[in-house]
Each structure stands twice: as structure tokens, then as C-alpha cells.
Amino acid sequence: MEGVFTVILCPSCNEVGDSADFHCGQCGIELAQAVTANADLYEVARLQQKIKEFKFIKKQGELAKKEVIQIIQRIRTEYTAYTRERETKVQGWGKIVKAVRFAQTASREAQRRKFAEMLAPHEQRKQEIEASLLDLGEIILQTEAFLLEYKNRL
Image 1 (cartoon, one colour):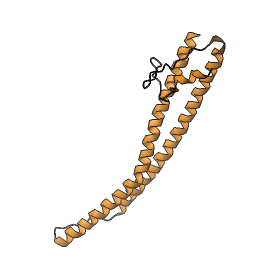
Image 2 (image 1 turned 90 degrees about the horizontal axis):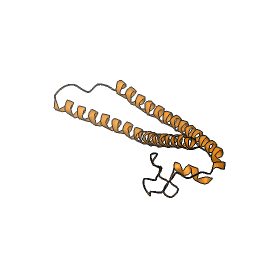
Image 3 (image 1 turned 90 degrees about the vertical axis):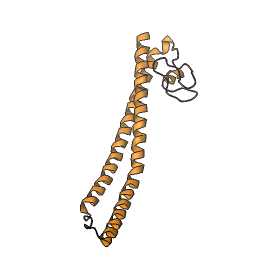
Image 4 (image 1 turned 30 degrees about the vertical axis):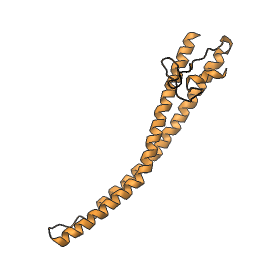
């Protein structure tokens, strides 16, 4: 029977179903489908396999997140090395000293912006991966909850 996996995603709008009542929050379609007795063991095996697949996908996402975190750490390490190696600002109160300090500040701000621009796409990707992992975790929990409820009905 094809309808068992609609517990996870709504077939009409592809939204994650509500684990409490198995109705789509967006369009209201009932996601829990009646399963005939002769297909029960097959459906349980399919759900268990689907949970394994979701967990594997989640591990892949966690690995991708680790790779992005390593890139972010490398960029931050480069910036830290840059800040440690740069010279201190010129000291004093004269007009020439203030002009030199102003130039130094502008240079440092430009360098800071450069590193921030280098970090931005990786930070964004990290946030996207984290959001996907949260959604996937919710899907896994909903599928496991449905499987437990389904097994109790047998």
C-alpha cells in the first residue's frame, strides 16, 4: 500500500504532518491511512527501512555541517593570525598621528569586512544544514511515533 508514508509528508502540499492527530497543518488532509491486515508486516518493515534511510541522511547532513564548521574555523584562524601579526596603532595626539591612525583604522575595518564576507556564505550554509537536520529529526520522530502506534494497533 502506497499511503503509509503520507504520515510523514502531506501528498498534496508536502508539509510535515502533525504527529498528534496526523492531519496536515496546512491543508487539513488526514495523513494516517488505514492498512489492511495482510499488509501489516510489509508496512512495518517499510517504515523501519524508511527510518534507517532518514537516519543515514541525517548522518550525511551532520558530516556536511562538520565540513562547513571546519571551513569557518580555518577562516577565523586566519583572521586571528592577521590580528596578532599586525602592528599596533600609532600613539600620540598630533594631527599627523591622528591621520595615520585614521588610515590604520580604515585598513583594519576593510580587513574585518573582508573576513566577514568570506564567512557569510559558510555561516548561511551552516544555518541551512542545521534547519534541515532539525526538520529531519522531527520527521524521524514522527515516523517512529507512527510506527509505535501502528504496532500497538496490530
